[in-house]
Image 1: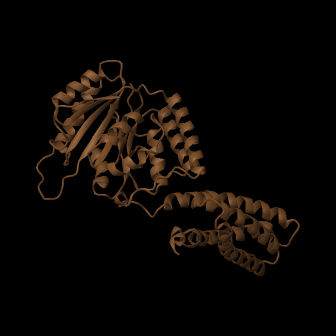
Image 2 (image 1 turned 90 degrees about the vertical axis):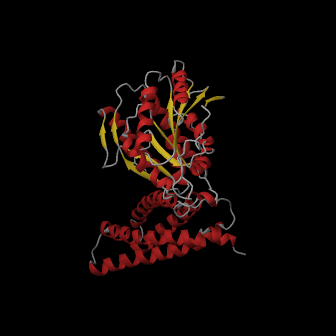
Image 3 (image 1 turned 30 degrees about the horizontal axis):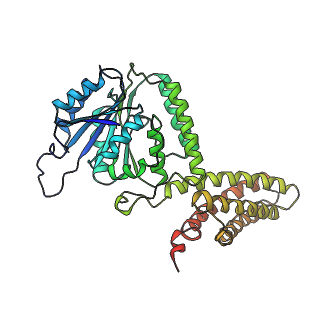
Length: 410
């Protein structure tokens, strides 16, 4: 249950008269708080002053009180009475993600954002954060402390944890964004609203899950370098938060392997999308390709002890090609069930023949140049040939074998 505190002024009432006939776009900034009685007033006043003086778009600041037990709600309510652009919402349950879900889901602004109450991130980065969203160029935007253009002041412990966490996301979830935890994010409201129903976490992992879901759905994520100074008074339990994040990563990974974790957005919100699924498909194809290559190498080296190089290559490549096509069918292109499974294997076999021709040609050329070439030289030539074949294979699978438009044709 929520208790909104309003002052009779709406976001529209706070908008200045438009200088043109084009509708002025607006932004809502959420500041989630929990027991911040002594911090929230200075934060909101500073944020309001900055936006009022420099921000060229209509805005609203919403203080989302996460079931505080001190005087935070009273302070937030007083601020909402004082400033027409300030709004306050009280939630009966804790959770930063829960607060953002509540306010973002009900927002009437074109772009929704949030920032931490300590304002550790320099406010000068706020306009660059939301500008690509207001123009429709991007779908979500994040402040990154790990960008080479950022200026960050924080202790070695937090630096190590942050970099380790983001490295884990890149290694295990194929994430392309650089900083999942920075409390400085924004998104186009119509896009965020479509994503919220699929995000399960209501606490600190909410940000990461939202970003992974957006990336999995082929949306554009814009990154902004920020100036960031660590708050020495931060009360975040780092160990507990890290464990919760690891559990969240495991849950999202299980959903992805099951074929879930992707949102099909309506056409009206797709203006800033990349080619559907391309980001995820490239990442999934790369992971499956790496595993297939390792399996191929082991098979080739084992068979080479008993068979000639050309025959060992053909058998190893054939076995891994069948497994590779099946894995890409299921995980990269999301095709399930037995229907057309054999056809897909046959069509994928054409890519196998191409790879076989390239790799066999590489072996033949190697032995023509060096008649006494050993298994290590053969393996190097095969890896180089298969790298080229992999690029062609992905294109064939994407535009032909698993192209969804083929299923729509009579």
